[in-house]
Image (cartoon, rainbow over all chains, first blue to last red; front, side):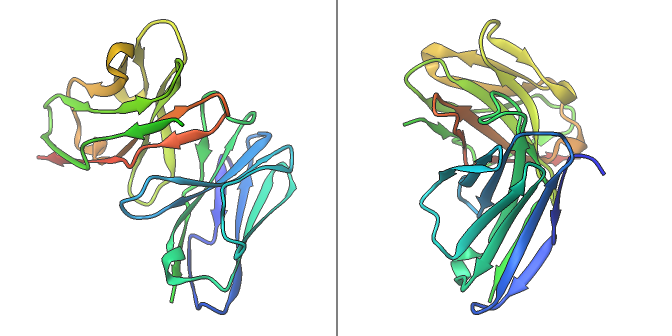
Length: 114
Length: 112
């Protein structure tokens, strides 16, 4: 596989469930990102990891918990979410932090919270 | 703080017609500027980027953009659109803190 792969592509969960989103990059990049894409709003940067260390946490509620076990994998653990958390969650990677250029995005995980 | 404004939420053009998508940014110094495209059900893909030098940059799929410092703009252009160009287009700016900030996007519709 090449590029950035996200699973699952679609997820429906209740407010009391716990689930996880997974992202894997096959590009040898050192930085990985979670973005939230909601209708009619700009992409919101949620978390940034550089060399497996979290370097950015943009005031994201604690019901979202990221994990970066190595430079190729990034998870977003979800628990007790709210309906307003329904969105497309995009994972991205870049060769170095900030990219100074290109972010490579996965196709996203469409989350629906009931 | 840096910000990006894309004033047009939707744009409709006929196939074969020219296209210009507007982007204005707010940033104190010379920014790094980008245009990304998102096709339905896909992630974002980089079309082109500006760091320095020539203010007219060429990208993939026949797109180009021009950086105009005096107008704080970085508009995207294509001389002749194809039906496959129908997508959402995002302008983005990267500041000194390495954060990449995206605009709200412009959805492009193509008439046959």
